[in-house]
Image (cartoon, rainbow over all chains, first blue to last red; front, side, top):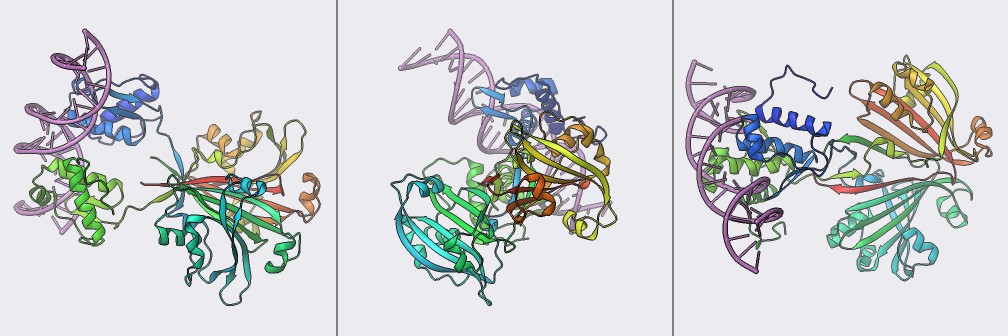
Length: 248
Length: 248
DNA sequence: GGTAATTTGTCCGTATGTATT
DNA sequence: CAATACATACGGACAAATTAC
């Protein structure tokens, strides 16, 4: 049932693409095998080379084939590989706090990763990090929303000295100050219990359930450069996200 | 610093695209405004129409401009809008349980959404759903992993009668049986406490913290057709996901 | 290693169709 | 209806990459 609308008038390149896609899906050309040359396809479909190329171009966008000069156009996937897209326009959207909250820095110091911490940071035990402890509070009532431990690569230490009236995230502050952008974020969500240390600042009893979220930001140039662990006591935070299917 | 490699030899259409993109970024053509016509661009760049079109085509793929026959090509964004991509190949990957777990169905019945339930399902209070209660257990020790409440659109009721030796998700079972695919998933993660009802089947004390995940699957044809709420007691489950930046 | 043949990539000019104004 | 502007299609030419001899 891949051919849905026979009645609809297809353009010539759409028709060529449809036929070739069906043949690829049917396995006429296996993965790695070459399609006929553009010249041969011109003859087969009685079409000009630009029409054939336009058809192939669409299949390349779908990730079905790949073309190499002097060699040919070969199949790399039997079906367009779908991706699932999280509908964010940026990593900052991942954690959306109301605008009326702000981050209050409590302590900043340099530490060397202990074995335990290195596990969480997924770094070596040698590496030094800037450790920032902070809380997120509502602007007016100053009610605590969450606790934050942030581990920042030393080369970006200066962000912690910046004034932050808009309540921007560390990720965005680093981006603005150093021009460093995250290419990848690894997110981990789990349930934990409030321990002795966090009980008093968050104003909840020890053992209260909380949502912990670890986010590791990295890019090819700087590697893993920011790891944050936020702890949200029960009922103060929900993590929401939308996913959509997406054809490449 | 958008122009990175002056030295590299650019093709003609790449050069045209580069100039036009810089002009768009600089605000030469505001959002909603038209670029010069293809014919005018031909003259300005002393290039053929196909070269100009190839340049514009790239900018359309980037979401910078949109073209309408008989009207013109107009700017819709001043910069290529990045998306954040969750690196899943399918929705099934969203909840990855070890292969050695399976779903044990406990009870199935049809219900009409109460006001409270309708809120969670984001449906009308009139609508009827098939309510499935189940647990996920490890294959060998039969230790409980999680509790599952699933609400299934009535037209897909037959999935609950299917044998499921592979431990497939309901989402996948519906897809296999009816050919229905989800186009969208809305995910909500929060902390809850185990209540009286779940305490005994999960083998944990009442009040134990747990990770609750609500997933709503929908597509344009069937609307919201599957909503699941899984409850994972502390330390039995972590939600992980990777995000990547992605240029459209 | 070098040359020739093959194949895709880029570019041109023209003609016709289709949607909008 | 007419003019305008993008969409599709054709055929030809040369460049660049790859392969085979």
